[in-house]
Image (cartoon, rainbow, N blue to C red; front, top):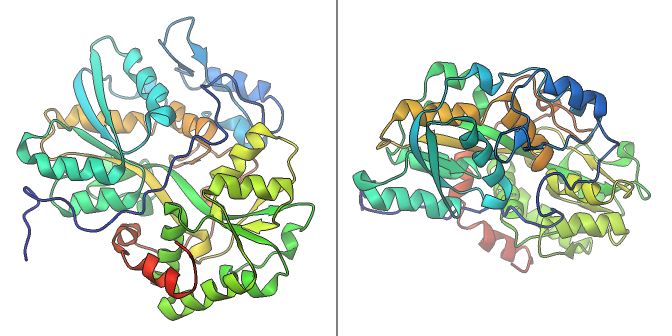
Length: 394
């Protein structure tokens, strides 16, 4: 049956990537440094990026707490500062699939910068917010849809509910992180956290397929977690169902330990309960944020599902009252300040050129990311069935 995008919800179940509060403090300004205070870096940033604070934006605003060393000290030196972007004026409504505890301070900081700008944000899951826009049809209040993953952005765009973005905005990120209708604003990489007391990085395989058989390790994972199921879906797309089942069975044969979420996988690695895991990269950084001396580090595989890269991002809804304002708000999420916020506060990968990750992570250009249509991950409804076929309890 053909469905109209104006009167139905979107097809496909989204494997939501839970933005867990595990390891996070009650707000910025309370963080332990990952590798010592980046005092020099913070000073140079203040001269380069304009607004480097959150809160009311005034003289008493609490500054971003810069952490990390090396590339992290240069956060904000390049990129486009908010001061060089078009001023925001008017009112805007954002439907956000990103949780308020992660991005609420940033949104408030952007709003406080402009006297004639006000923003209303409705928070919920990405699938929920996308479906709400479709259900509301031409009467939607949404000007911007802000998603935790590319799948929801792609499905809403395919439903005809997004306006084309300007070429100038799209040029702010690499081509694989945008389409004509949506643009990524921050990213997360699949990774292999490992206990440094058990392994050196040189001991680890370069291919995700080799892990269950090449290492005599105690493995950990979170198979009920949306991010993990998206990873398995990526393996299906890249390697096929038979190879994926074989890998899952080998992992089960190796005696993999299950955890309820990926942060706890990394805690277990840091505690020495298991040696190696399969998680998003930022959970490792959250553990190190609380425990800088924990024996845990990040490894990456090359060009396979273990190296997949997903993005959070935004689009301008087709019924936006002021499309230029909506696009310029998304532009602000790609400012040097906002990109540094994502790197420091949510431990994600910045996507704008000239803003580097923190925590001794490689730059995006140094990651060997597979060629994968991220929007397809949202429609892999039978991934859970395939995991059960391989003996995984999900």
